[in-house]
Length: 171
Image (tube, rainbow, N blue to C red; front, side, top):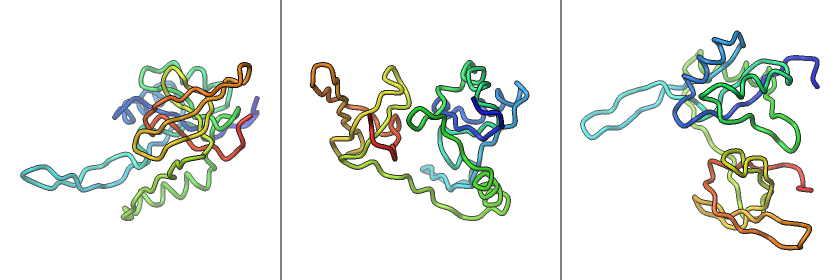
Protein backbone atom coordinates (compact mmCIF):
# COMPACT_ATOMS: atom_id res chain seq x y z
CA UNK A 1 0.00 0.00 0.00
CA UNK A 2 1.35 3.40 -1.05
CA UNK A 3 1.70 6.04 1.64
CA UNK A 4 1.82 8.84 -0.91
CA UNK A 5 -0.76 10.16 -3.33
CA UNK A 6 -0.11 9.56 -7.00
CA UNK A 7 -1.83 10.21 -10.31
CA UNK A 8 -3.62 6.95 -11.10
CA UNK A 9 -5.01 6.13 -14.54
CA UNK A 10 -8.66 5.14 -14.94
CA UNK A 11 -10.56 3.86 -17.96
CA UNK A 12 -14.02 5.39 -18.46
CA UNK A 13 -17.13 4.35 -20.33
CA UNK A 14 -17.16 5.27 -24.02
CA UNK A 15 -17.51 9.06 -24.45
CA UNK A 16 -18.10 9.54 -20.70
CA UNK A 17 -14.80 11.13 -19.70
CA UNK A 18 -16.38 14.47 -18.71
CA UNK A 19 -19.08 12.78 -16.62
CA UNK A 20 -16.48 10.54 -14.96
CA UNK A 21 -14.30 13.57 -14.20
CA UNK A 22 -17.28 15.33 -12.58
CA UNK A 23 -18.16 12.24 -10.51
CA UNK A 24 -14.59 11.97 -9.21
CA UNK A 25 -14.54 15.65 -8.27
CA UNK A 26 -17.91 15.28 -6.50
CA UNK A 27 -16.23 12.71 -4.23
CA UNK A 28 -13.61 15.34 -3.34
CA UNK A 29 -10.69 13.96 -5.36
CA UNK A 30 -8.43 15.97 -7.62
CA UNK A 31 -8.73 14.70 -11.17
CA UNK A 32 -7.45 15.73 -14.55
CA UNK A 33 -8.98 15.24 -17.97
CA UNK A 34 -6.61 16.67 -20.60
CA UNK A 35 -8.50 18.27 -23.47
CA UNK A 36 -7.49 19.44 -26.94
CA UNK A 37 -9.09 21.42 -29.73
CA UNK A 38 -9.93 19.28 -32.76
CA UNK A 39 -11.54 19.97 -36.09
CA UNK A 40 -14.70 17.91 -36.54
CA UNK A 41 -16.05 17.53 -40.04
CA UNK A 42 -19.75 17.26 -40.77
CA UNK A 43 -21.32 17.07 -44.21
CA UNK A 44 -22.12 20.80 -44.20
CA UNK A 45 -19.43 22.36 -41.98
CA UNK A 46 -16.18 22.06 -40.05
CA UNK A 47 -16.24 22.97 -36.37
CA UNK A 48 -13.53 23.16 -33.70
CA UNK A 49 -14.52 21.21 -30.58
CA UNK A 50 -12.80 20.36 -27.32
CA UNK A 51 -12.12 16.62 -27.10
CA UNK A 52 -10.24 14.47 -24.58
CA UNK A 53 -6.56 14.04 -25.51
CA UNK A 54 -6.76 10.41 -24.47
CA UNK A 55 -10.23 8.99 -25.17
CA UNK A 56 -11.64 6.92 -22.29
CA UNK A 57 -8.90 7.95 -19.80
CA UNK A 58 -8.86 10.25 -16.79
CA UNK A 59 -6.19 10.76 -14.14
CA UNK A 60 -7.02 10.86 -10.43
CA UNK A 61 -4.72 12.06 -7.65
CA UNK A 62 -5.29 9.72 -4.73
CA UNK A 63 -3.84 7.01 -2.50
CA UNK A 64 -3.89 3.45 -3.85
CA UNK A 65 -6.30 2.33 -1.11
CA UNK A 66 -8.85 4.86 -2.45
CA UNK A 67 -8.95 3.26 -5.90
CA UNK A 68 -11.72 0.82 -4.91
CA UNK A 69 -13.96 3.76 -3.94
CA UNK A 70 -13.35 5.44 -7.30
CA UNK A 71 -14.08 2.18 -9.15
CA UNK A 72 -17.62 2.24 -7.71
CA UNK A 73 -18.49 5.33 -9.76
CA UNK A 74 -20.92 4.68 -12.60
CA UNK A 75 -18.75 6.15 -15.38
CA UNK A 76 -15.50 4.39 -14.38
CA UNK A 77 -14.90 0.99 -15.99
CA UNK A 78 -11.58 0.03 -14.42
CA UNK A 79 -8.24 1.22 -13.15
CA UNK A 80 -5.38 0.54 -15.51
CA UNK A 81 -2.83 -1.96 -14.27
CA UNK A 82 0.59 -2.78 -15.60
CA UNK A 83 1.34 -6.23 -14.34
CA UNK A 84 0.22 -6.32 -10.70
CA UNK A 85 0.71 -2.58 -10.15
CA UNK A 86 -1.81 0.20 -10.67
CA UNK A 87 -0.68 2.41 -13.56
CA UNK A 88 0.43 5.89 -12.55
CA UNK A 89 1.51 8.97 -14.44
CA UNK A 90 4.28 11.15 -13.03
CA UNK A 91 3.58 14.69 -11.83
CA UNK A 92 5.96 16.13 -14.44
CA UNK A 93 3.97 14.42 -17.22
CA UNK A 94 0.72 15.87 -15.82
CA UNK A 95 2.43 19.29 -15.82
CA UNK A 96 3.49 18.77 -19.44
CA UNK A 97 -0.07 17.91 -20.48
CA UNK A 98 -1.39 20.98 -18.63
CA UNK A 99 1.10 23.24 -20.44
CA UNK A 100 0.13 21.77 -23.80
CA UNK A 101 -3.55 22.30 -23.00
CA UNK A 102 -3.07 25.78 -21.50
CA UNK A 103 -1.18 27.09 -24.53
CA UNK A 104 -3.47 25.41 -27.05
CA UNK A 105 -0.58 23.71 -28.80
CA UNK A 106 -1.55 21.74 -31.86
CA UNK A 107 -0.86 18.08 -31.18
CA UNK A 108 -1.46 14.68 -32.64
CA UNK A 109 -1.85 11.70 -30.35
CA UNK A 110 0.06 8.66 -31.52
CA UNK A 111 -0.91 5.43 -29.84
CA UNK A 112 1.75 2.86 -29.12
CA UNK A 113 0.88 0.16 -31.55
CA UNK A 114 0.39 -3.39 -30.46
CA UNK A 115 2.10 -5.76 -32.84
CA UNK A 116 2.19 -9.49 -33.37
CA UNK A 117 4.22 -11.07 -30.55
CA UNK A 118 3.69 -8.26 -28.01
CA UNK A 119 2.76 -9.14 -24.44
CA UNK A 120 -0.64 -7.60 -23.66
CA UNK A 121 -3.15 -7.27 -20.86
CA UNK A 122 -6.92 -7.08 -21.33
CA UNK A 123 -8.18 -3.92 -19.57
CA UNK A 124 -11.94 -4.13 -20.10
CA UNK A 125 -14.69 -6.72 -20.21
CA UNK A 126 -15.09 -10.09 -18.53
CA UNK A 127 -11.44 -11.02 -19.17
CA UNK A 128 -10.06 -7.84 -17.59
CA UNK A 129 -6.68 -8.47 -15.99
CA UNK A 130 -5.92 -11.52 -18.12
CA UNK A 131 -2.53 -11.46 -19.84
CA UNK A 132 -1.60 -12.94 -23.17
CA UNK A 133 0.32 -12.50 -26.40
CA UNK A 134 -0.92 -10.68 -29.50
CA UNK A 135 -0.91 -13.18 -32.35
CA UNK A 136 -2.26 -11.04 -35.22
CA UNK A 137 -1.91 -7.48 -36.55
CA UNK A 138 -5.22 -5.79 -37.44
CA UNK A 139 -7.76 -3.40 -35.98
CA UNK A 140 -9.18 -6.31 -34.01
CA UNK A 141 -6.45 -8.30 -32.34
CA UNK A 142 -6.31 -11.96 -31.62
CA UNK A 143 -4.79 -12.69 -28.25
CA UNK A 144 -3.41 -16.05 -27.23
CA UNK A 145 -3.89 -16.91 -23.56
CA UNK A 146 -2.01 -19.87 -22.18
CA UNK A 147 -3.69 -22.30 -19.82
CA UNK A 148 -0.54 -23.70 -18.24
CA UNK A 149 -2.09 -26.63 -16.35
CA UNK A 150 -3.13 -28.39 -19.56
CA UNK A 151 -0.41 -26.91 -21.81
CA UNK A 152 -2.92 -25.32 -24.21
CA UNK A 153 -3.53 -21.86 -25.71
CA UNK A 154 -6.90 -20.17 -26.18
CA UNK A 155 -7.19 -17.75 -29.13
CA UNK A 156 -9.57 -14.84 -28.46
CA UNK A 157 -10.62 -12.04 -30.82
CA UNK A 158 -10.65 -8.74 -28.92
CA UNK A 159 -10.81 -5.06 -29.89
CA UNK A 160 -7.54 -3.14 -29.65
CA UNK A 161 -9.18 -0.59 -27.33
CA UNK A 162 -9.45 -3.35 -24.72
CA UNK A 163 -5.70 -4.09 -24.75
CA UNK A 164 -2.59 -2.46 -23.39
CA UNK A 165 0.93 -3.41 -24.29
CA UNK A 166 3.02 -4.77 -21.43
CA UNK A 167 6.69 -3.96 -21.01
CA UNK A 168 7.27 -6.91 -18.74
CA UNK A 169 7.43 -10.55 -19.64
CA UNK A 170 4.24 -12.45 -18.83
CA UNK A 171 4.55 -15.03 -16.09
